[in-house]
Length: 109
Image (cartoon, rainbow, N blue to C red; front, side):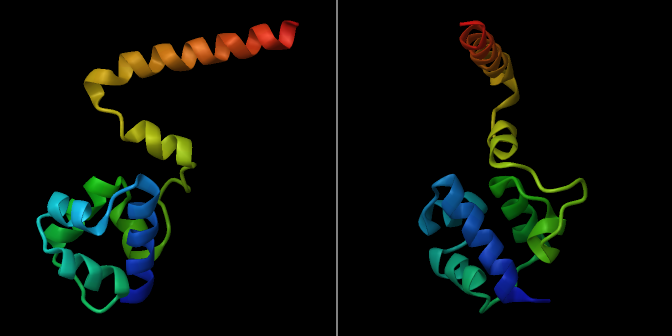
């Protein structure tokens, strides 16, 4: 296992999502020090911690461990969309529709 590369992928996504190490540590039920050790590649992690990281950071386990996605790399927009709670998707759909309609109107002018 290339723990240093794993840690870099985790840190990159944590920072992209705007989480501090302390915030991530709390979300995945580890100490901030252990979270730091994972990101620096000093320590590995349990399967349970890996699963919590995957869910919290919205990354596949395959990507965390190997740097590859099963279905191709998602764009940042797709990553953000996946963060949307299921009960709020209807609002997100309305915002996207309004945005696309506004773009169409701009193109007509």
